[in-house]
Length: 508
Image 1 (tube, rainbow, N blue to C red):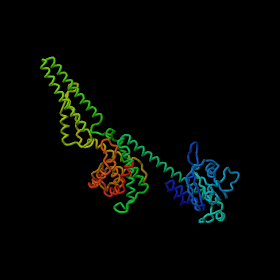
Image 2 (cartoon, one colour):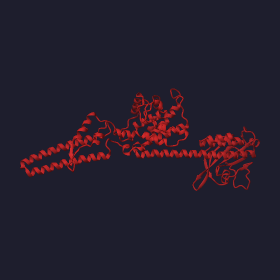
Image 3 (spheres, one colour):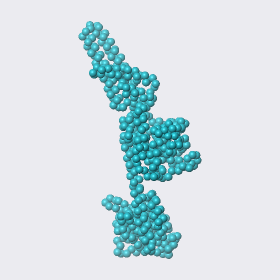
Image 4 (cartoon, rainbow, N blue to C red):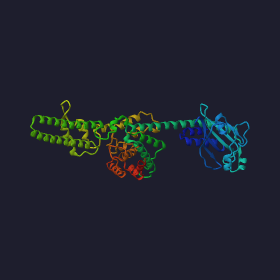
């Protein structure tokens, strides 16, 4: 019994545990068959879940089912009253009992149920969590009950010691099941927390919606491909269920640190922030109206002071000057709109930004102001993408934020490497990654896998307004360049391609 108790306590998988409970109960009581029922919540109360059944003598299809928790059935009576039910012959139920044995199974399979023992699975509080129902206690453990004659020869009532052993196991089983279910509930709770955390990130940065989930699915798929590998440097690497779960959490939470990055930087699609660009366009509009107003003012002055002929010539000259100034302003506005896009800025355009900045106008107070402020010049001169250097560093800081956040969580032993894995997803094998500049030996293999998947999704994702998605073939070509530059692992990339892990992202 001690060995059984230890085995039950070490099993965390609920389904496997339930199967083990029923199997061990049958072994110690020499029962030919048995069923396990669980008490579960239902609308307006509770019900019994017919969870599983085992039988050494007949084979039959089985599907879970639910039944009312009343004393009208043997299992229901046992669970409702918390009492043991012993029957020397299930077909001869005492008239004082409110239940009858259901012969449907026997009639459908040709089986003959004779002795029956139903045991309540009570936890430490005396609450019934389920019922173990054992059938046909055999004189010989290896006997097969092929027909009624075999039952008559080999089956007898469950003896007192079998009842005691069964009750003892039922109690241990209830505690083990409760602990396993608690572990499962905590795991589900944490799963929910992780999904909520990812959703919080995506609500702040809708442009990357689905990124963490896709990276997670691809990384797990790549780990499964590594598990299948029988040659090469990763031939001996295998991931346990717990390590797979650890990797899944690390991949889902790898970008959680973005909660520490300003939202306007996270979603910045162009070089100027929307408000900056709107103010600049308003400024150009003001300059345009100022040109028109000064032109109109000079026209009035010419009409008042000059002769008709001279005034006509002056008005024509003023119109031409205003047209040239307005056209020049329009060219400036068009160039700014073009330079504001997150594309590669041609080298000659840097001078154009500077030339525009040299132009000035008079504000409403009469002070001279440049067409472009120093901040606008700096942002419009970004050579590639939409982020200035300080903004890029702020975005990159999300890795440190992720690590610091994840390091605060008191992980259990099997998940303790989550912070270490998540913090390295932007590191490169050649030591030129960020934020820690780790080299290949310092980067966990799980992070190396995640890096490949993260780069692929960043290149191929169609939900980012600041860059166009590239095709799958182009994304793979770029990753090949990363391999050549010793940025990502060549063997892992080979498996990524050969196992078509990237198709996981395409399907998502």
